[in-house]
Length: 342
Image (cartoon, helix red, strand yellow):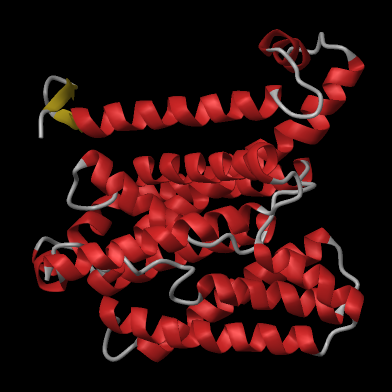
């Protein structure tokens, strides 16, 4: 793979950049930007790019400003940020488990976040903030349970995936039980939240995800070298100076936090965390999924999925339905590819 080497400080500090991931990242960024522009300019009240730009610089018509700043921009930004969070979380989990199925929505962490939010919805009168906190708490508790059950003198990726799948199915049953014990109104609200939707998202959903990404993404980049070395196996990573269990625990904590924050904003949108790293890895032809390209792929999938749900299918269709349909086909293809390579 061709690369560019940047040197500084008299050649004592150097940075090696591969051309293909840079080009793929640029293409994904352009695709995400194009989807954002389409989401802002189309709909029941079409706007030109000039009208949107006028609103963004504070010179737009009040009616246009309401459409852009209140209805469309918070929704599409939530999609981009949550998609990026899911993409990075999926890349981390797939690396530390060394398994393409090691995604938070497959190994139960997303179901745990949903359980926490459901308990808040069904047992309290808490609003969006309380539901978000319940989702984060549910994800963290689930991750702790899975990690402890998978721990046998250390955590192996294969064991973590199997334990997580079992805990996930138990939590899905718990979620169904909670809904059957709820009132009709609470059950409808919970069922709607469980699908995963961007309908009605405002700035109160944008800022928490943006703040979390501002803190968690730099930490993930700092640990990215350890993450790549873990792909070589525990013995090889340990021989190269990586504290295997400490690095795996730190990376898992970061991925759980990203999953929980994203789920708190939109509900459990399935398959984005699973598909984004695998698509990014195939586009870049890299041995391991990159964090940057996985984030951009997740952002593109979420923004494009919500755009398709709004403009092409049904305005009220949750984005989770679209990602579920596409992701199911992708999962079948992924399993077929894995089976053929064995």
